[in-house]
Length: 298
Image 1 (cartoon, one colour):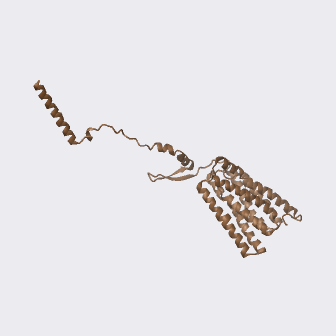
Image 2 (image 1 turned 30 degrees about the horizontal axis):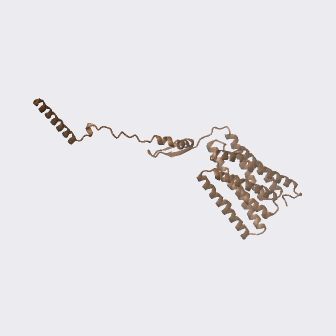
Image 3 (image 1 turned 180 degrees about the vertical axis):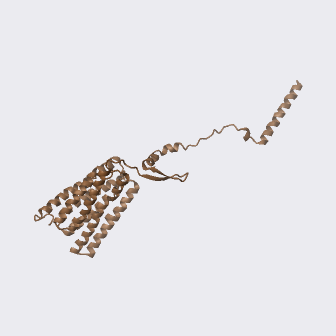
């Protein structure tokens, strides 16, 4: 066992250190998910990095089992599978409906469909060392995708000038973890372990650099285009203004109540038909004539 052999004490040391750092890296998002649990809302956080990390951990376990001498890879990736599953479950619990559907689709497509296909093809179409080589390159590809997944968060940081969704502790732990696992792969002469961590180190440095640039910057609220139903005009409104408008919907409804006139309002002269006016004049004339006649009689 190369990972645990006493002939490779330095490799074992880096592997053990990699397990400890990677475990702490898996725990780095805990404050984020505690915030999600406390506020009962995902608040714009994305599930893609956690789904991809779960898929990568599943692949590395499969690779380590095939190679049969990578126990340190099995231990850390098993822990990663458990932790990432808990994160995704919490996300699905408190995410809005649209985000839940998106996360569920990715889980079914990636962690069930693609992983099942890789498992089936490697077992049926390859054997022995060729199977390890094929799966090794597949692991390299998806390990790179784990490091690339935070690109959406990097874009959000640049767009909003806010590091709220990119904790510094996570970026630092990813960078250190990449360095340690690179050295581990180098010492045990496993290029499939060493190669992806070069890119991991690069992205980690970029994230820490962005944190240093934007940590004290004034956040920029992204604008959202909102169409005016009555005028057909498109205006740019900050997202928080839209939220306030939604929360204030009952107040808006109060302004739309109709004001009705009393049903017993007296009609005006303009509303009286001409025939009714003539009848009224005739009655007045008749009453006046009768009054004159009565006066003569007296």
